[in-house]
Amino acid sequence: MRENPLSGRGDLPTDASQRRDGSQARAVVDQELMRRVVRDEEGAFAAFYSRLAPGLFSVVYEIVRDQKEAEDVLQECFVQMWKKSASYEPARSSLFTWAVMIARHRAIDRVRSRQRHLRVGEAATLEAQVSPPTPLASADDLAEQSDERDRLRAALLQLADGQREALHLAFFSGLTQTEISAQLGAPLGTVKARIRRGLIALRDILEAAV
Amino acid sequence: MIDERLEEQAASYAFESLEADEKASFESELAANPELAKLVDDLRSTTANLAHSAPARVPPPELESRILRAIQDEGRSQSSSGMPSWIPWALAAGLAICCGALLLGRTENAGSIASLRERIAGSEKQSSGLAAERDRALAAAREQQQQTSADQAEIARLNSERDALTRQVAELKQKEEALRVQNTTLAAKTQELGNKVTQLPQKSGLRDTQVLRLRSNMQSAPRASATVFWDAEKQEGMLYTVGVPPNGTDQDYQLWFVDPKFDKLVDGGVFSVGKDGAAEIVFHPKTPIASVKKFAVSLERKGGVSKPQGPIVLASK
Image (cartoon, rainbow over all chains, first blue to last red):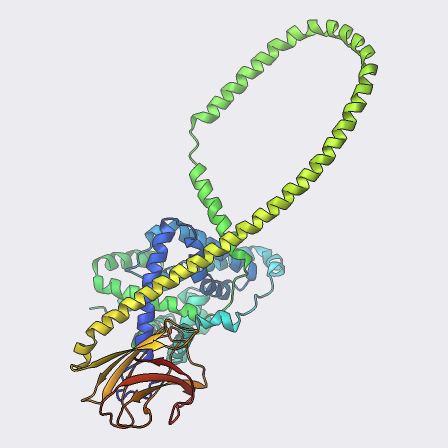
């Protein structure tokens, strides 16, 4: 529901209440899905893949910036998640958080490994192997994720430019904080403070929105 | 109490960017400090949310089957990795025995070669007769080969049909799985709404509340419904919908009162329904209502109308 011209009170009903209902229902579904993946029930992994693959592929691609490598990393992620499915703790994090952390870790490992190769003089070869970019998702593909994306975009716009930039580099670049400091030309302490303040502010904004 | 230094380490930990020595000491602090553990969980979740800022891309369709194959291979390699250690030794011992037997046989065979040569000479005489027989056998073999080719073509056709059916079965299973997930979602929502409905009179203070159930008139959504709680004294009500199709961007749903005191329906205001089919609103009539006989919901142009013009999609009895 977008607005409520009937309501005499500003607090009822809200997008937030529906979002909360949605996230609770999603948590129930995620838990049930993981229970079935752990039991290796037929069709469970295909459903698991459909639920997570588009979001994870977007993150992995943004980090490795290469179609073929992004596909390889996504494959490694799903194999790893399948092996580790029994260790997933729903009380500690959502399925999405768990999966994104694994995917990001794998993608950054891939980038660092590539950089090691580049340092030993294979730059030209690797450059030639980089495949063309994958097309962006269509409107239909985006529909399901659009609420979360809109919510995050709105939240990020409330942060200071420096905080937003630091968070983006910390998440997607695979650079250490020292490297980020060098890239931004800012002292390491400033970079650490921007990341801390930005992340805590982002948490507070997202929580307030729910 | 968490100071700035710990907050900074928690943020770095969430990004997995703590140095090894700092990470070890932070993790021991983490194990002993539940408040810090909660902060880390929150920050990890916030960090994961940054994933939504990546431009959305879709993986190629064939990647799913490639990954499923990789997982099946992984499963097979795990289940076959436990070969007993005595097997290579047993194979080596077997080979050694075979080598010994072959060495003995070589000596005995030297004597037999001479007599065999004599027998070969005799056999050559018979070979011309056998040649004709061979030609006949070859003709029969060719005929059989043609038949075999036809059989192989038939087998290939049947295999292709079987593969198509297997794919259909896999697609149906995937659809079934999607429906099962959808059912679980709906069941969870229904449960939540049930709880809300039970608690509503106490929560909202609507004591002498009239409760009316609105049923669907829509062929496209026969299971859509709404529940209205109406407090005549306060002239205030609440409406919950379930399974109602989302309205278009140029449309609104509009609620109507049927009060015998008026000769036309009384406007209860407009509302929108999102993709999940659910809406919950508090409403007040535009004109004071004496007694409500019925409630109805129509689908109207954006902003609503003074009297119903669109179809009545939900109505109470």
